[in-house]
Image 1 (cartoon, rainbow, N blue to C red):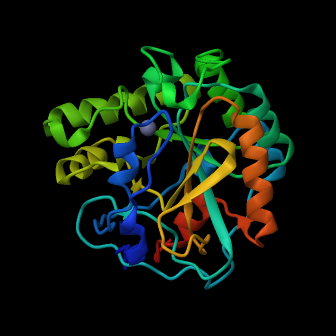
Image 2 (cartoon, rainbow, N blue to C red; image 1 turned 90 degrees about the vertical axis):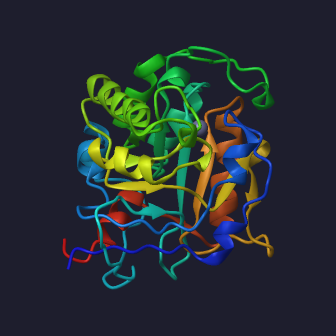
Length: 292
Ligand SMILES: [Zn+2]
């Protein structure tokens, strides 16, 4: 059966933490709403299309699900599922990073050399440094330094580069056609620049409506990805649960911001000290589809 119904745990809806990032606080405040949409089609095939030569040589980075580890999820209806966390009991979490303003070469080196699995949600205007990033991130040293070339380096280091719109609007304020232009336009740019069409979408601020899901589907998106915790300057994890702990299947949200390389090292070491592994998001999403 090709049915997928994804219900993040209730705690995921309790996101109230301020986000000091390239995205505004509203992004965090509205994130983590229960993901309930459903859709035919596979959640993601980007692992095989968004990775480059380096990743191919060694296989995609990150832990893959064991047989029977991920609960099968039913897909019903016609819309992409909205996913806030991965339904596993294993101590594995998933790293994602949004926008693309600050393009710190030290981050690419870490991802490549340590083979760290991470999914990037690229936003065109950030990648191309059109406009001004959120000053809350601090003064940038590498704002727009590498443009799409930076993301080609990430792709070659095994990073799946996915869709985060062209201009970072609050999609709920746009018509379905306008939403479609933002989402399909982003996929076209990423395909042109990186050679692979995104299959995952993250709505700016975590804000979406049914028109968003319809538009995303028409742009070839298989799943909409939200998150359960954000990573702030200094590698500090801003949890969305009262007990302030990482939980199996958490999806962490970072941003391309100043001091990323330093903060990222702190974060990864912290996650590993707590006994968590880093999962390959695409492999886990694929395992969530029962008929693949
Ligand atoms: Zn964003």
